[in-house]
Image (cartoon, rainbow over all chains, first blue to last red; front, side, top):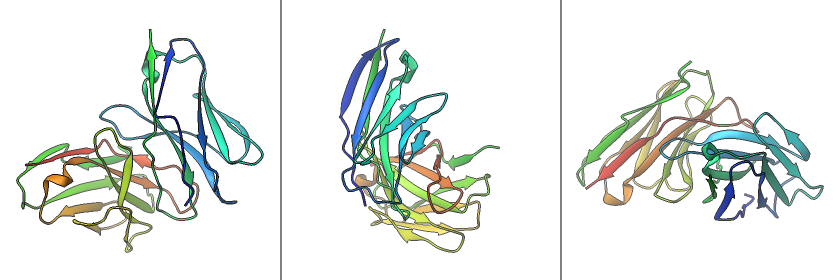
Length: 109
Length: 113
């Protein structure tokens, strides 16, 4: 199972772009990279998923280099409501999904 | 669609008591999961059910049992609760094996005294 490493916490200000990088050195060929967001007292919520290069949706962008050993979640123009914990997961070819401790993003006014 | 629902929302138990946490999904998903989340920590997989009729252990199965009652429902049972099982429990489901995203319920907060 590919292990992920991401920063424990990050601070930002409203309106800024936030980039959270996750490393996953032993990612397997068939693995996808998935990011979840979790607000206090709620279950995680899917943000974005990708395999390589760049994926963009209405919430975020995901950048994955050619070697796929890392990925970067980009949140454009964050607001106070983006304060949450963000988890990077590498989907294994099985069911034992591993959530790490995640990155606590705190957005200030 | 309600998505993934969990009952109860909150429960207080005494050490040694038993209880069952209920989870149901209305998305016709094949796979279901139980996680626990301790304060300030990530989620840890307790048990999962890849499809109706099958269950398997996750990362922290000790002290728990599960039942996949049917395609919609997946319950988690604590036979003899311990203070170390104080946590927030999340149920999740996803459509099928593979790269599908998981959908999470709102969680059950359990306090064991």
